[in-house]
Amino acid sequence: MAKNPAKEASVLPGFGFLATPWPRSYLNFVGRKLFRLAELVKGLGAFSLITLGVTLSQWNKAVRVIHPLIRAEIYRAGVRLLPIIAFMGFALGFVVIGQTVSLLTRVGASNYAGTVMVMVVVRELGPIATALLVLARVGTATVIELGTVRAMGEVEALEALGIDPIHYLVVPRVIGLAIAIFSLTVYFILITLFSGYLFAFFQDVALLPGQYVGQLARALRWEDFVLLILKTLIFGVTIAVVTCYEGLAKPLRQEEIAEATTRAVVQGVELTVLLDALFILFLLF
Amino acid sequence: MSASPPEPSRHLPLIQFLDVAVMSMENSELTVLEGVNWSISEADFWVVGGMPASGKSDLLATAAGLLRPQRGALHLFGRDTASFHGDELARERLRVGLVFGDGGRPFRYLTVAENLAMPMCYHQDCAPAQVESTVNAMLEYTGLDFLAHQPASRLNRSWRQRVGLARALILHPEVLLLDNPLAGMDPRQASWWMGFLGKLSAGHELYHGRPLTLAVATDDFRPWLAQGRQFALLKQNHWLPLGGPADLDRCAEPLVQELLASPVR
Image 1 (cartoon, rainbow over the protein chains, first blue to last red):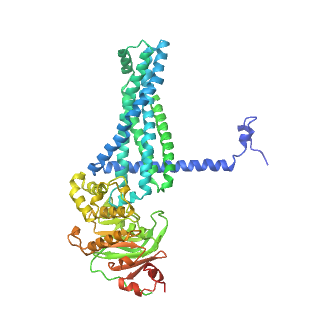
Image 2: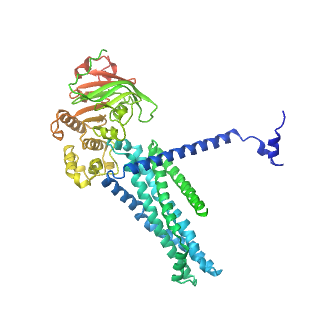
Image 3: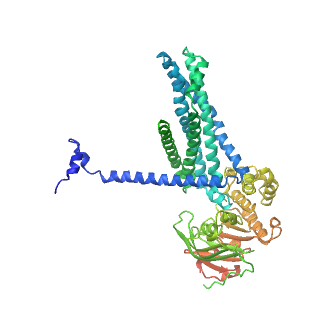
């Protein structure tokens, strides 16, 4: 049989093994993964659209039931997480930011302290660290709660009472989580910037508080505020949609809730990081 | 067996199945019942018997508008459900109360009083304080007043089932569907249920003396012989009308005798 010259030409000498076909089992594995990914994207997309539709169409419906649920979600995902966010902010400020300021001063680049702060804390670290913390602390609880609701048949009970389960169970979580992540990020950034300077102060860095604040103010652009709001709201909505989808969208048995929780956390982390990368691209171009 | 038709109703049908194929709640591609022709009219008291997994819960869920018929037509209050647009089905669904089986499925994160107040507040867009008197009255009617502030998750199965009943009644449905309400209940609880449903069927003060239309699914006909007016059986994926209580004894169908706990002839 004649050899395929195009195939031969495409393989470098010594890399002939690349020309051999992949094992079928490996192809099957990759194929299955791709199909599952496509199914997940389709499911999440549909769930997001349904949630958006219900949020808009039932915006003014049952506000005296839905608004207390939103407030409860803000309390649970925001106010109750303030201590851990404060601790994380202090720790990161001391460990990362303080050292950076100290290093910049040693190499005579203390003028850039504010710029570095804004780039690291305001644009990157603040939103993503807060979102991942909320995902770990509240996202997991959401999947377990909604998974139990689903497994115990309470979704059908809501429908039987003429209550839209998306409106009652998902919409408050989406709005509450988005507001909570935005608010927590603001606190996280303020605490980190403060503790970072505190570390630099203890290291006898010649940077007066007024200079530091001035550098920060000069480094901040209006886009930073817009992006911060956009990023945190989108992270909040994403985490809420992923956790609600895994807990609620498919029929679950009680023994499947743990697996659904793990799945939701992995998907939440992947999607948050992916969105963060997209924001970076948007900022660069 | 030649079953005599159920006692003809003098009223218009509230819920009507026309050659309906009922799907499973677990798997929408699975057909659990074929060719159901069932008409629930005002002041009826239907008792539908069947073995476990015969499709009783799916039949009631379809009657409550929670499941679409796979084939055939389902009419709710004179209108084909296929013709409903937007949230019309959700609105009509409020006219049918469904008490789920196996513990009534109350909302476990809410207290007993909150379980009753929440649907009212949702539909009337009001604060719980505004419906407090209605909720308290319902708690008293159903004997749940002493459990008002208990979380539903802490109650045993019988009391949870009763919360499910109170929650279904709080919206004043015109038809009440009950899925195996007496399963696993002690005689004291069962006696309360029979008495309360009897009053609802005859005309409870909750409904200003107007009889409430009832349909019960069960795996035991015996407790319902005194109160049920129309009986039917689910067997091998089919709907079999049996007639009135007097017809059951004459019925040669072995499954009916089994559900009456009689020796099979």
